[in-house]
Image (cartoon, rainbow, N blue to C red; front, top):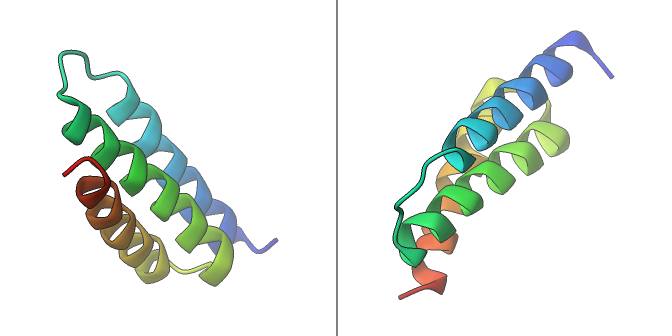
Amino acid sequence: MTSTRISSLIAGLAVAASLGACSGMTPREHSTAVGAGVGAAAGAILTGTPGGTAAGAAVGGVVGNQIKR
């Protein structure tokens, strides 16, 4: 793994961990946060770029949000 890919993965996991610490979320908010975290991790792994991480987080957040609709 390159240092960029590792940095992107760490950033995605940090976002997921910080969002996981929130309490009092509705099920829809929780699904959105989990989707964003998973999407960020997937984007980091698949692309290895910060842009890919951000895009993965955005797509994952939208998917997570729509699941609990």
